[in-house]
Amino acid sequence: MSPSTVIVGGSVGGIRTAQALRSNGYVGEVVVIDAEPHVPYDKPPLSKSFLDNSLEADRIRLISEPEVVESRIDLRLGNKAAGVDLSNRMVVLENGDVVPYDDLVLATGVRARPSPWEASDGVHLLRTLDDAQRLKEDLAGARSAVIVGAGFIGAEVAATVKKLGLEVAVVDPLEIPIGQVLGADVGSRFVGLHHANGVATHYGTGVDFITGSRGDLVVGLSNGVELTGDVVVVGIGAVPNVEWLASSGLALDNGLVCDEYCRAVGQPNVYGVGDIARWFHPRKKQLVRVEHWTNAVEQAVCVAKNIVRPSEPTSYAPIPYVWSDQYDWKIQIAGETAMAEDVVIIDDPANKERFAAVYGDSKGTYCGAATVNWPRAMVQCRRMLEGEFDLSEPVGVLRQMVSSSSKLRSASAD
Amino acid sequence: MSIIKADMDLCQGYANCVMEAPKFFDIDDEGVVVVLQQEFGEDDRVRIEAAVRSCPVTALRIEE
Image (cartoon, chains in turn red, blue):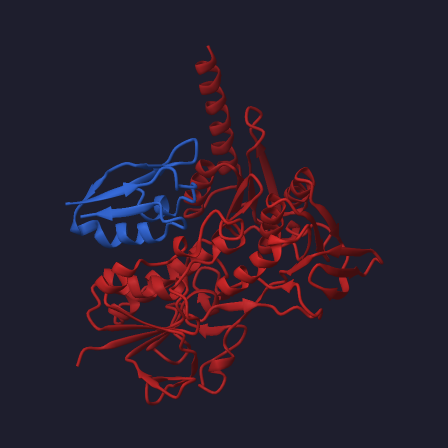
């Protein structure tokens, strides 16, 4: 009998694992189980191009139907997994069916952290296609929105909702919400971005209550201010979907605990991919869990290789990379910026729409970068993160890029 | 021989393809993908497929 890999979770991590198995020559059965009834779809557009109606649901698919057939992926949609029986190597579904496996990939991701504030309706979370569809419907007749949480999701939703013509206010308990990740100087520019686009921010204050209903909601802030909105979106983080594994015997601690090869601890035939996986990062020498699209894609490739070649597994040591699109800013972040001790901002006098920030650790070693509207600079930054450089080196490279592009501009002006 | 096709209008400059397969992809100063080498052989297939699937906006595809 041919071997079988069962993948639980049909979002980007699960689907890319299935595809990468075929790329790497896997000949066994590939089964993907997902609780949602929808054809596997991509999540980043849900807060952006899907929400502003520029892309319909059939344009945000993760895999085309011909490729599902061609790659022989057995998609079992609308099936919620209820547990894993490790000793008999099978996944148990909520409907009582069992699905046997030789290798198991757990990719059930995260869900939006629920709103601790209750209102009868009109308060939205945003994680799934159904969430986005419901939000879209409420936004259609709305004139104003309050966004609680100024992380990537909150900031992206604020930008999209503003673009739709609503009056928007954003609330966050931190004074400079992205400052923890990018530092206060860069973080302040992000605060200014909302203001420049006519979005009000209420930072450094919590939310005490949300009352009312759709079309007439009140968000009461800890500083006494009451904001009114037709719609409220709560974006306050995410929690790993591991509860269904509670009785499996797998090691769970803020995600599925995995070794450096992304194998569940003590279970060489069980792998974690994407937001759910908290694996031992061999370079950082600690367990990490990353909720980024690119991480899920790269981890999927690593896990597929390790399933195909288990005797010579590849360890997983990615350089983190994440993007966000907010208003007219294309934001790209790579490496480790949160722990940085030093930051150098490089502006381009000839192009005020773009800038880069590079980060150094306590030893002055280059450790991360953020760019706005400057993809080519980010490529240089990501490449240099693969080696070890003093912070002055990427600074020099970026300054060189600024001066050569300004020379180019003045040459073409002559 | 297979051929890489890039949709320059879809490309947003995320550059995952450049990191995955630098021999085949680059990004220009406007932040748009440049396909350095359109044709590829079987030796590079796994890498090119991974690069294509790492594009967040599906701007890349393979034509056989």
